[in-house]
Length: 346
Image (cartoon, rainbow, N blue to C red; front, side):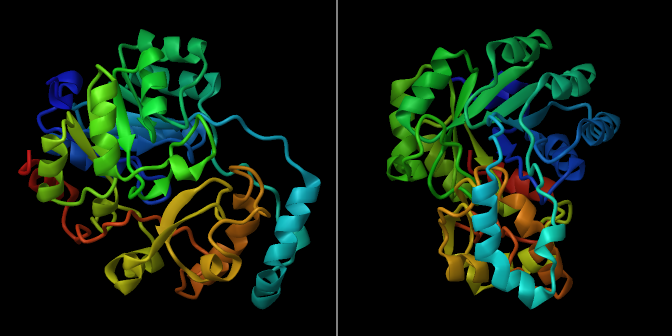
């Protein structure tokens, strides 16, 4: 079996999951320098900010790194849907004294484009990963011209086969336990989503490329189980969120350390696309999935001022408290130490 250590030129078969909103270059540097594959979540950075983060990585690490992008097609904004969404949020705007009319419609997260490719090309990242499928063939050819390995998330066997047919070097088997956005892209049917240890062996049997297990893996025992089911390596996210290198907010850290972390759900309220997070007030009161939420990523704009106001008061009631179903690996230890402890299970 080809491991990701061999494929990516790293010492340990551990990928730190790219986690938009709770990390920047410091986390990626720490994990890469420890021998794993550090990742930078690029979807929330402007091209200039992305260049600055990559400059920081190259200045502080000579090891391989992964830069992660979303592959969604930006939707055409709908005034009617945006109005319905703001109407659903109106009681909360009133509670915090927020003028809904003054809230700009924000783009949320940006897809991979030629402009973004221009920004990262000088840095030639060793690994480029994608969520929600793959970019256009022309963009993918640009990435390959740098010598980068290409990986992407699959949430079903069909998606894994599609990714292999489109030339990825490895597939990330993203189980239903995983925190953050589901990588689902061939359909919108959430009933197709499987747990990691049901999905992983099916994808291993279906494709020839190496398969990386993701979702619910938080300690060396989870790593050992993934390897036993044929994984070529593992991707871990939630367990890193209390590390000092993470930029996780105070309310988010408190939720991860408390009993609340035991109750997560898939929700589209914060971005418009299903993602797993800790259940909070907004999710309880509106329901975790709402047809009123605009298409991804347009739901983010109206939520942003509510999140900011609540967090100023120390509350995560309106924040996307991304977390997988297994937060027991979350500890306030350096990311390098966590990486080595996870690798001990290999």
